[in-house]
Length: 120
Image 1 (cartoon, helix red, strand yellow):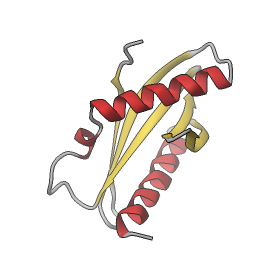
Image 2: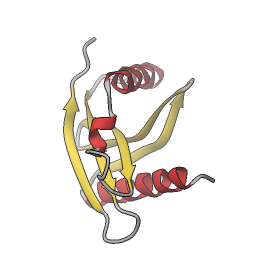
Image 3: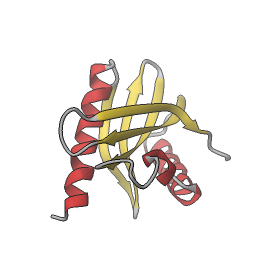
Image 4: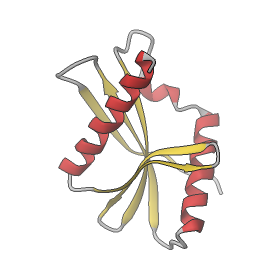
């Protein structure tokens, strides 16, 4: 497996553990709808949270959260719509970004709640 894939998998695992430690219920990891994917779907009390995880060895080339561009946001929103329709949900929801920076401990984790709002 390529090094960036290993780093991404590790970042998603650390982000899931981070959310669990904060009291979230992690419902799904790597949920797919066609070619679209949501890294983590969690619940915080009565709010469904769609989480995009960005992992980087360092921030040498910029802020990891900046990699969530307009195209990625459109894909996430579309995947979230599919999830909501599939499970026939009627609840509050939001989109978060979690960045995981580092190659080894101590990792730096940043959680950006309500990172963007869908336009639908």
